[in-house]
Image 1 (cartoon, helix red, strand yellow):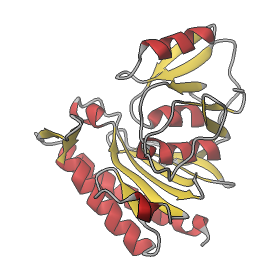
Image 2 (spheres, helix red, strand yellow):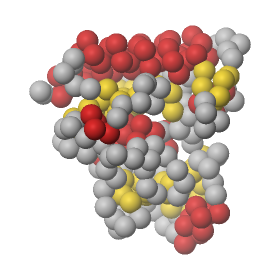
Image 3 (spheres, helix red, strand yellow):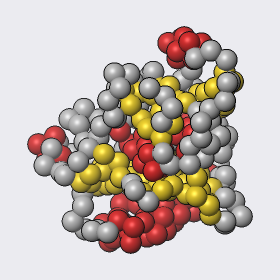
Image 4 (spheres, one colour):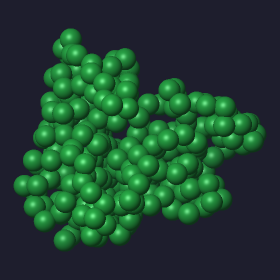
Amino acid sequence: MHYSSILPDVLKIADAASEKVLSIYMTDFKVDFKADESPITAADIASHRVIVEGLRNLSHDIPVLSEEGAEIPWSERKQWRRFWLIDPIDGTKDFTQRTGEFTVNIALIENGEPILGVVTAPALKEAYWGLKGEGAYKRDRTGRSRRISVVEPGETKRVVASKNHLNEETRAFIDKLGAHELVQAGSSLKFCKIAEGHADIYPRLGPTCEWDTGAAHAVLSAAGGKVETLEGRPLQYGKEDVLNPQFIAAGNWYK
């Protein structure tokens, strides 16, 4: 399959899900909670349905793993060489708090690596996408698209951090970087800030799942950056345990 030929269709699917999400965002929606006490809304479910239907029509032979889908046993998932990995809404807390910094995320994983990713920010009217070997792009709220890439940091490192997950371990890591300034961002937009050259590094020393990172990881990689574990190994996907280890997202300057 030539992935560049299906990327426009994946973007259309993400845009369709974004429209559905935004229509619910503009209402007095109800917030429920899952068993792990994480929030969920009708927008999460609606986005999931739009994306799954769209991807199955686009590529019926590629399985789909979604945060809001039915749990798929490892005995089945371990056979997958490639699969779609989706987070219908990343940053549900940002959604419920109406910060606008939530995203719709679609990634294509192949042999444990995210090779294609689309991230849309419905409330911000922005979109990012990337494909391995073909670069990364951003579409702004005017509808114009441009190629994006990571940049070499200056003397003061711009550190993107989560408003909801800035723990003491993360603060200690940031302090070791020396001169720095914090760049606040929600959801998978933290990766995208680095991909477009507006930030330099994102240390995530707290829990995340594969669907939280896959799409934006693909965008950052296509923009010339990387996402590695604290041991310096590439962040991998398609594991038995969908929880990610701690990781660092940055441009190639970070060793």
